Length: 511
Image (cartoon, rainbow, N blue to C red; front, side, top):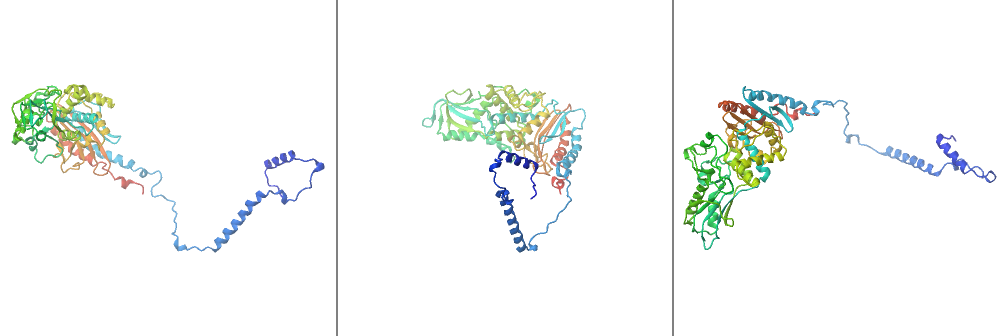
């Protein structure tokens, strides 16, 4: 038998044989050849032979229905090559889509002699960045910082409380002493007369009803007050207006500020100018006016008040008779941003100052807004925060900051959803009605003499889940600048809503 073992096997056997070599005088006779083959090596070979035999016999007896098996076709060619750009369709679509925006971007940046910044981005991809960190007057785009800071600090469910207190509890329907109306900074504490001036245009407007607070006093069992109604506005300071140009104050861009004010601090508003700033009469004493209006409401409900009205802090240990809770902060912010409400923005600013720094002033609130943004590591280079509404022409923002703020908040955030909706709600409802951006633009406009601004988020009309963040601010010397540029904003926003204006992803996907 031929020895097929390797040299190594033979050498091992030789060494083993030498180690066990017996004395020749007692060595046994040589064994037969079969005895030299280990039985453990035979068993696997026999089993393999038997298995092969059975398998062959079974295959010969088996039958296969050829018609029951589908035909298999093999193709060596690919519809889309491995290295085709179609395998990442965005690589085909995005350059075409970006290029389609260029004409409208060039138009809106076109007017010469103006200081302009523009940032447009999709997710983390910047489509355009022009003077992103140029320091400019933002007008009402300032409200984006104010409302963002308030939402960050308190959350969307935060509320404001207006309370009614007394120096003594109710006894047999009588309050022996004064009734105190205590302001809590609710910016939209109103009466039905004020609310009715907006008619059916109530979308996005949220109010607290002073009538409901009067009803709560009745429900508390009060029938008579031996004293009078005293307004308490001690939560905020006594400054009625911000650091604004006189023309803005006399044109009623904001009512006089107070932690206790009804109807945004106005005492009268003629029906012929319903819903506008024109013809309104600002109250000289907002808290005193609120107390007088509340006294009238109590009288209408049959509560006898022996005294008149006054303004003074309530006693520290005053008994709480009734409380009126405002709508949640997310609704208050929606009212402010959708309708660019200056009064509401400044009330939030004073509230931030009082609650966080112990001083209910615009200056303290502005400092707190900056502090909140600093803690969140926003780039505040070139930023100057003077008020909360944007009426001050000393404010300075950058497109880079506003775009980053909107991007961090996200399209589904309370902040973005609080903005005016093109064609549907707020200050942009008419301007974008019937356009591509109708219902897809969530924007905050801004206007001062020589200033125009528009920032927000636009949802694509062509592809789901595509959203563009944009910020646009222009400063110039011409008062007529606003109308000229506002005419360019509509086609610009329409172009954003049409993005990506290129073949759809589905058309560019692998075949």
